[in-house]
Image (cartoon, rainbow, N blue to C red; front, side, top):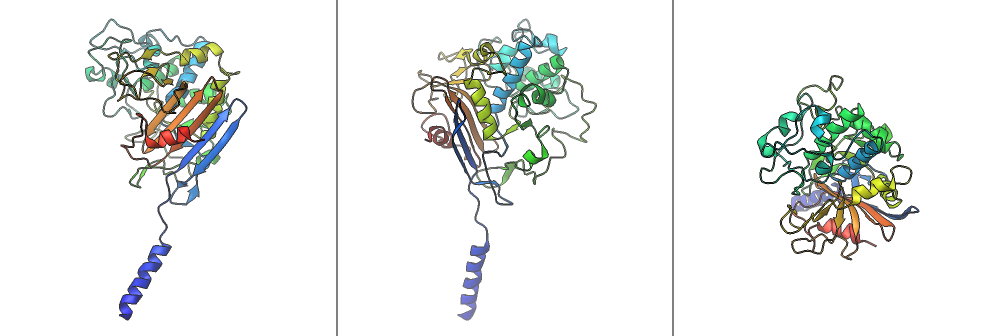
Length: 384
């Protein structure tokens, strides 16, 4: 009996001393034209250290990165370096063509609005030393049933092509180009694949966890990663040739930014570009380039029904669309993100002059709300 009591006591002590699994990290920053109107942060940025998440901690924001890349494109358009409707093959020096429609040019406008005809392969990351052209030339990378510009299909692979075009036209590596054109002018300590962030910002990184608890990405231990790109051997970027592999710095989803950073971008959008972009350029981004008509695109189960240039518009009142994220029927523009257990969003209500930036980690892969969005996205979008 005494042995049994001792075992029970030891078990109780172990249960008390063992740290409980930390709650998923969640951050929400609401804002208007004047500044922040509400901030919420809960959970652990790093479960190993117990560091609590804050609104200043950078996280991989997933596909919101696409919207930020589009800001860089429009800066280059305004500078006369890029043309949204020019054949990108002419800029790149290598061929970007759907083999089923060899006479149809592929343009930045089509790539930004997911109407180029490109289809995501199982793996669209291209390691250092390999060329993006080797992936884009494959027939299976293209929709053979639809001419470029006529059909919407969300494709991450289009953004490495965009980044390659930006490099060739700008004469600078994508991560540095985005730092100079977008992040520095907006006074943001943010970066793609941790490349240009300060050490102090990197020390605040948010580790991404899956719903099962294991680390999914960015377990940095507070330090800059040894290599910011995917490699097979070595990490020598000195020999990289501009325009050969825009996938290196993950333009489709690799932006690391805090929710305060995203809120700053949101305020700039509400201001119509401010001193950063012309009002007409912001309008060009937000103008709906594709609207689901029942047969002209893949909505991803009602998630995408209106899309501009890397900007989503919602909601859509049409059968097959379930995109009323805010549940109020009001028009919102922005972008969502999902990867490595994270769900994120940056959305503005232009008429009201308000917006919200948020993320949640360790979400269930099949999390489903009453719309096509996840429960976490709906809750964080609608929180008052």
